[in-house]
Length: 169
Image 1 (cartoon, one colour):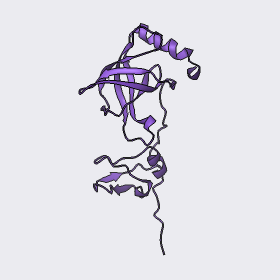
Image 2: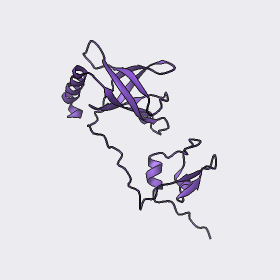
Image 3: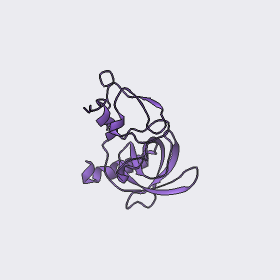
Image 4: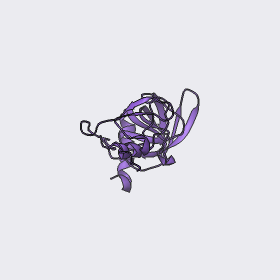
């Protein structure tokens, strides 16, 4: 008689968020998530999963500002190269940049954001707050950044631009 493995109650939540082994970064399948402590099938690292009865599961969108789904050009330098990428969404406090280039969370950098009909790009100091290079949907591969320094004129220009868009009101 075959017995079905009882999956950990957070398995569906974690796999939807693409839970990776913290050591080898292999993607864990829902079938791997069977107990509070599991072994990575690739490297045998012990991984402790959260206990739903005691842990608060955070909402996916805890941003302070409404995100506007818009594609805008951004330019920036990494330690290795000059990059031109495009946004997936922008808010008054940050943006998601589609890129396959790994940028560490916590990295601070300068970038230029190009807004249609402006002669010059907006200059921004940003900090990488999220890096997602393993998404199933390539639209979700990239980095989330928050604005850490933006001059008042640029901030006002960005705010007015986003307010004028119908998807962002």
